[in-house]
Length: 400
Image (cartoon, rainbow, N blue to C red; front, side):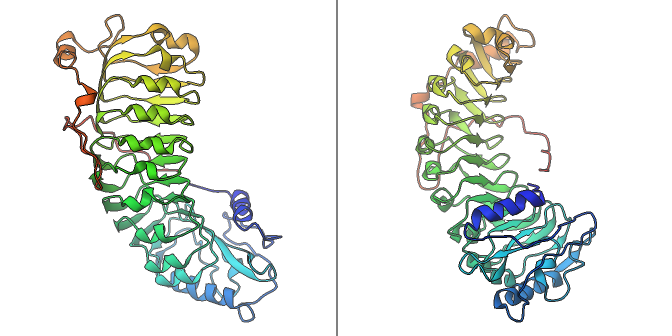
C-alpha cells in the first residue's frame, strides 16, 4: 500500500507517542534527494551507527535500483538517505533513531540481509511493489517496536514467515502478492495485537483454520489462496472487532455458518468464487452495518431473504451465479433502494439472464441440509463435503 510522506510521518508520530518532533527535511521522490537535519552524527550516536551498518549491508545486496532510490545511501548521515525516516527515540527524546523505512514502488531488486535486525527502533517498514526475493531473516525478531510491515507485491518465498509473529507490537501485517506457501499457522489467529491481516494472493495450501476466531483483527483478507473446507463457527469470536472479511476464491465448501451473522460490526463480506452450498443464513439480516455483500459464483440455493435486502447501510449486493430460486419482497427491485446488485445466472423464474430449467433442477432437487454437513473442525482446520471447484478468478490486479 502506497503511503505519502505526510501520512508516513503521521504514522510515526502515532507509534512514537513520546517523540516531540520528526527530523526536519523534504522527502522528494521525483529527484530522490532529501535532507533531514539531525544533531547527532553516527560517531556520537551509537543507534545511528548501528543503522549505518545495517543500511550499508542492505545496499550491498541490492542488485537493481532503476529509480536510484539508494543512490544517496552514502556516508554516515543515515537520516538523509532516501526512504529512511528518523525520529527521537521513545526512551530518549534527545537521541535520533531510524524509526521508519518507506521504499514503496521503488522497483528495487535484492533481498533482506540479517543486519536489518540492528534497526531495533523501527516502527514501520513499507516495501510495497518491489522485487525483493528470498526468505525473511530471523533477525527481524529484534524489531520489537515494529507496528506495521508491508511486504506486498514482491517475490518473497518459503513458508509463512513465523518471525513476524514474534513481533510483540505488530498491528498491520501485509504479505499479499508474494510466493509464500504451505499452511497458515494457528499462531496467526492467536496474535491479539494484529488489527489487519492481508495474506491474499500467495500459494498457501491448507485446510481452513478452525481457530480463525482467536484473533482481534478488524480486517482479514485470505483471498486467492488454495484453502479448503468449511468456514469455522469460531468466526463468531471476532464479533467485537471484525469489519471486513474477504475469503474470495479460497476453495471454501459446505454451508455459510449462521455465526457469520454474529459479526455485528461487519461492513464488507465477500465469499465469492467458492463452493458454498445451502441457503443464505437468516442471521445475516442482523448485520446493520453491512455495506457490501458478495456471494457470487457459489452453489447456494433457496430464497434471497428480504431482511438482507433491507439492511440499512447496504450499498452493494452481488449474488449472481448461484441457484437461488426466489427473491423475497424488496429483493425483487433493489434498484429502487439505490443498491447496486447482480442476480444473473440463478434460477429466478421472472428475471432475465437466468440458468435453464434443467440446470437448475439438477441442483434444486437435491437441496443440502446444513445441519448434516460433514464439517469436522480440528487443530488443522475444517473439513467440509467435497464440492466441484468453482470458476477460477481471472488474474487479479496487483495492489497500487
